[in-house]
Image (cartoon, rainbow, N blue to C red):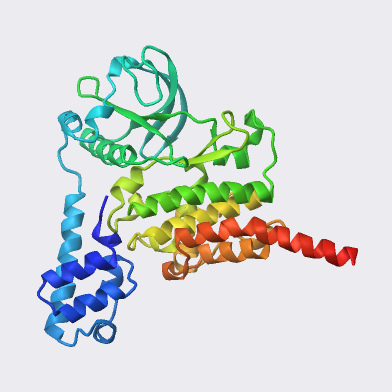
Length: 394
């Protein structure tokens, strides 16, 4: 999903060149580190003049108005329009992922959210589907879309198109879609995992996993989650609703915990600034998202920081606060989760956590920076321990 809000400098420069502005201006845009269209729109006239050489008031007005019209067009393109089941069947990407309704059986409800209900289901494919053998029963996760029919189809198309394009060890595997106009059912089918990260942190007594969520394990989980985020951002996607319940955990097929990011309903539709009811879960959302401002990769970094804090503190972020209270305290006052609740952790991890939770999106590290720094933490901890041991022995 390529939205102008997430355009690179090259794409912005190409668009501005098409407006007839001088080559020098577009070249300076290409060389300047920008964060999408909104970043450029938020610049003052003096900044546009100084940074890009837009000295003419007419040129500045033309650039601003053109970019605003571009966002309006993007907003219209992503609005809910009349979709039909035939749109799924004719989609070049989704057509090979169509699952007949008779092959799917819903068993028990797992969870329920704003965009749908998730069930444990059984899929008996008539033909081989990825790693699933034909004519055998396979346990799967089934998300039933909620809402008015046209909205359900729209959400199904958007989320399924995103999931079908993803392939990464730390992204939940997409199996297919099941849509029946007659039965008025619209499902997204994905692999079934053992539990969510939320369960692992807050209700481990319900699980068959009997380990301990140590700082070392949190660092390892953070590495894997961050790898999934880097993959998404590399494909110009923003998840927009990262939280512990949207990180699924596989602990039965490997000796280690494998986290996988799921639920791309917001990633498919959060391609422009939108009102509060389109915001992800507020307790994990960044300040700019709570204020309904432009959404970019930095929003995922903030949510990732909240998840890291949640794993380390083993407490819910902003527990007991309503949406309005979170909006005021986090969105406007800049509150962050209480760092005093954290156990003893490496200084580098504490610094990284604080930077991820920066109020301003531009002050947060990129997902690649986070990935690099998280990987360095165990090495730094080992070096510190070795120095302490050497000092003790000497």
